[in-house]
Image (spheres, rainbow, N blue to C red):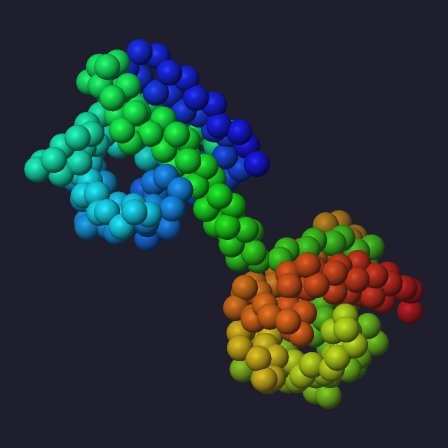
Length: 305
């Protein structure tokens, strides 16, 4: 996990951290209330959103709930909003008590798959910062704030990765007509794929077959042809009898001289249950399709008749 750097300069606090998530995700997690309420604030605090207007001049009202049971109403006025780059705002408590007030600038620096986040807070004076730190531990609270953001981002980054389709590309030393026949003609499919009783490359055609998972358990696959572009593309749904979830397998072919490029996409894997006894993890599908496309189909289409 990344470390947080903190610099105190008179009445200013500058906290920086490199986050292991792309800037788009970091921005969304910082600016969407459905995410904010799950990480905002120091350790052991929770947050209730009261309404946000993410624009220059817009307001955000929210209440922070401390571990001591005390509620802390908060009010932010956005001064500048530059998507995926910068947020500037004035942060204060409710008008009745108003013990805390400061300006904050948050910079989101795109580093590819990572983001450098810098939160620059400016208080009324150095003495005021020292008073607030003694009373409310604002420096440590800011560090914990960024730490909780980082922790939450890890869960969201995993979700994003898991929700991405599985994509495998292969190039075969065989003409496109031969590869198309291998993936669409039932007699040919039986020689390298699953033992499917009947298959027709026609939209709406339903078929099923049984196959063993890595634990040796039989699972009944239920499929339906969704799209057919003869010689180029074949898509069918892919689900399991007795389990929730539905996914889609797509074979796309393109000729590259005398060879054929296959792009296999398996989308919707995140809809399957990930519980004990159900080997639906993405890496299991990756291993299966890697063997099917890289060994079984490859050997079949590249073998001379």
